[in-house]
Image (cartoon, rainbow, N blue to C red; front, side):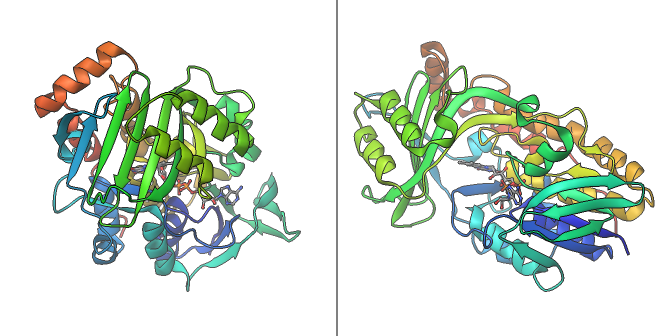
Length: 390
Ligand SMILES: Cc1cc2nc3c(=O)[nH]c(=O)nc-3n(C[C@H](O)[C@H](O)[C@H](O)COP(=O)(O)OP(=O)(O)OC[C@H]3O[C@@H](n4cnc5c(N)ncnc54)[C@H](O)[C@@H]3O)c2cc1C
């Protein structure tokens, strides 16, 4: 029985572990955090990805966590309402089928489905990989050593596996021209099942209520043609940068900036995608954001992570040779992934128009939802027919 090491236990990692176990592989998952992370911002499961969750037998449990977002309101620089739409008019989601839930609720369900059948090593990560003719020797940061037949990086946008096996992140990360800060704050507006987006050209402030929670997810996003120097690893500099970008604005922005400064769950990053010429090298392959992060502007990161994990496990099960399996995985998935990545980059983003003209066009589209990207999104998210690997 082939032994596979998976790095990362969020969406792609446990899904891959589930399907590899299903096909008879022996699986170890190494996760640098001390446990599967709960809570978090809402993510979508749409189109083909719903079918993956269904085939795992997890649809009822995931559907029970659906937060049922009903409306998205957009306001102008002074906080005046410009329009209100249903989320499906942007995302292409199908009411009653597609799902939205906190990321941690999804990872809890996925982890529960495999925890008894897979060896999880929390609080550890891969320090070194050495490939030879019959396997990959792995040194863990905790000091242990082991040999696996295959190693799969499911460790996200800033994947350590990718860095070790494919080279520096800068070679593969495509900056989309924005930075964002995400954090939670009290739901002082009493919002439920929806969100409000404030815009001025190149800036967006979003307050989002996942269901009827007493906390809001808040996002401050701003255009930044180049990645900000130095702010990447310094939380104080990140807070200063975001505060400076939003200084002097009205509506809820001052309250959001104050909450961002006080937040203990601030997540700051550049909005970026991962593009690699190949998703495998030798006995190491990548899945999910590590291989092809599409950015949150696509709304499809979790969905293509679920689909990719299913396809990768299936191809490994149906090819005796891992090189052929990895090639088939990429052949089957790359077109779908690239179309999903293009949701974030094709045309002006609905969430954060960059210029006054893009903002004017977006506002006009709110009044005529046939101009919004819902139909395109629907086509793209359902574009892959899943193979049946048994
Ligand atoms: C603010 C925000 C909003 C988003 N909104 C949406 C949305 O609406 N819809 C959607 O589909 N997607 C959304 N996404 C994207 C989505 O979260 C990701 O695409 C998805 O989680 C990818 O799953 P993954 O398992 O590939 O990677 P991740 O979820 O990033 O998980 C990687 C895992 O690997 C672990 N790890 C990292 N480094 C190492 C290491 N060196 N060794 C071991 N473990 C490691 C991490 O702790 C983590 O558990 C959003 C993302 C953000 C940041």
